[in-house]
Image (cartoon, rainbow, N blue to C red; front, side, top):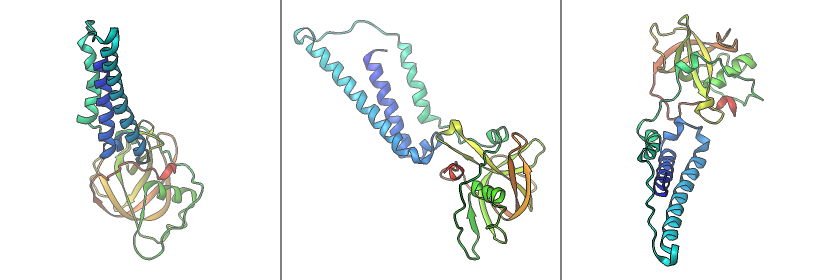
Length: 242
């Protein structure tokens, strides 16, 4: 590629990162806490593009006693096709990982270092999927008993059609996303579509099962009601790896 194409590609990539970092687009690729790094990377690329163009123009104007020298070497125009993947990041944002990935990946639930105290009172207790699963498996649901719980996640079905409520967790980016799963029992809706987001109201049950993919532990939740909800602002759950 010639310098003009290099500069254009750097600028376009930097602008794409700034666009992603100033909107929710970046959440399709990396965890929420990495937003400052995405913005910084975009700014650095734009500054690099500007510096590259300035040095190229300055070198051309001062070369050979100040007489501009024109580069007559023509690079193949196909090099501009490298801009297409960058444009795709803006025009075709990928969906968050969902039921297909969850079905083919074993639960990533790990034992937490500890369990923070939960709010007291009679109000429904809002928990993340990973928080409920961790407390149900590794703390025997001690703080969950006799509490009304509300948990949000998307639906996935195993090969036998058994329903699970799932959230995908990130270590860094979508490439390393792994699921944490809760099996559903009780008043489960008779028809469930994979990738539907639900807010489940229910109660703790000591019943457990094993993930058919990796034999990892999966707790059950006794469902009282279930209602569809929109996809959340951040579809990934970082509770399990914090």
